[in-house]
Length: 254
Image (cartoon, rainbow, N blue to C red; front, side, top):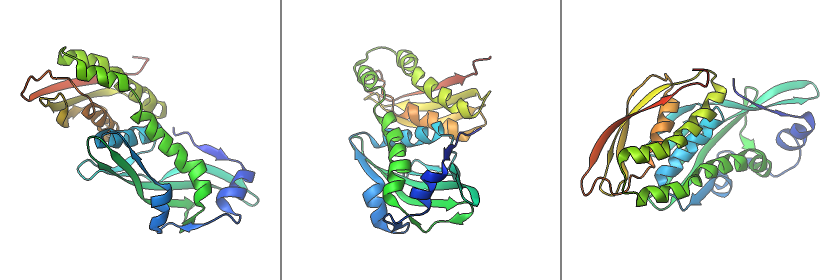
């Protein structure tokens, strides 16, 4: 079951629903440039992964994950319930996110944002309030995954050990993703088998889900993107190496 915030009547009344704060139309490009775009000194692949895992932690399903174009689209999901005099309802939203860049720098941009009060879609938003309460915490969750395991990545690049050594060292990263993901899916588990190529620099050059028993393509995609950011050192010694590795995720009860 997803966990939703409960917005008290006073907060909802004074910020998101009424008041005289600055408003911007949701089709205004300036809104997205000013409030919903950030650039980081991180590889684009890692940024793409960070967005996916952040939404997975929040229990938000992804309706589109286009790795080639760097596009991620979320489901419409409830972000809060509110209560004001004479009305009780929910606030929900949906994100269209583009991730661009190269191996040294990335830009994460919300290119389109949709929001609803009940079944009524908003055409405008109060950007300062939305930024403080909704967008800034979301970007912080992206950044949390960009900053993870920097020392481990450096160790991987220096490593002269085997592929199995790197897999063993980095698998706890996947376990963290699983532990957070299953909070919204009690009893969730299964095996994800990945097939990928390691190039001469130790980077994952291509990767695919060979098979899965999780019955959850969103989780499988997050695991795939996480592994795509790994580095195996110069294990390949001048040539590409293709491997197939299963990752098993089981509940504590098993």
